[in-house]
Image (cartoon, rainbow over all chains, first blue to last red; front, side, top):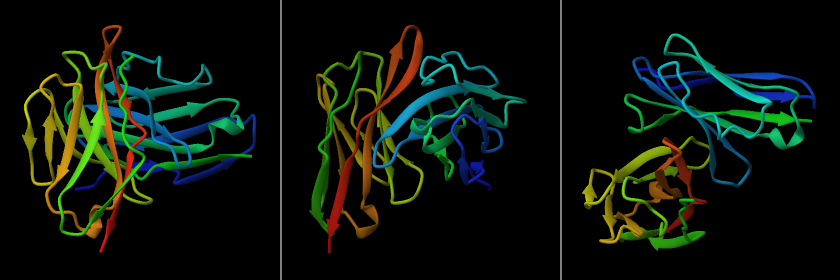
Length: 113
Length: 112
């Protein structure tokens, strides 16, 4: 079946603009996770959803970052007023149960000029 | 705060076993240990996870120290396709919520 998909695959934006990143999890997966990976670095955990609920938003880097999930499926990560330090690959993963085996998408490479 | 420590890189010969260490001295009793790997230009993929007992699956084995302050991922017979960055992760409880604490990863180099 289809895996986790993310769009766009690449996004180049100017400093100060808002961007929206989309994640389509595997159908039926109740949990969804967002990560950020800077060049040559490990993964930084941002937020997770159980259904449509995000119990803990403390991993988001700043209040410019927000995420939502609707219908227990698609999730969007929104970054307002982008800064150059936001440049990274943003990865989404889903799992059939919370904290179970995670299946990752290919990521969105965000470049802020 | 919970954290994991891994060597930056390791080398191994093809078709030999590989032991990838991870220290997590601040682990608490309810923290699970997960391992993922990331092949070049790909998203991470699940390898194995455990809590207290050693675990085996088709990909690898996970040996957890009795005090749980360290663990070792064992690849029984490395192939060139196992060359990747291996991440040791704690699923830690923080303020009644869970967080995933990813280590910096070990880059595994397989020599033919």
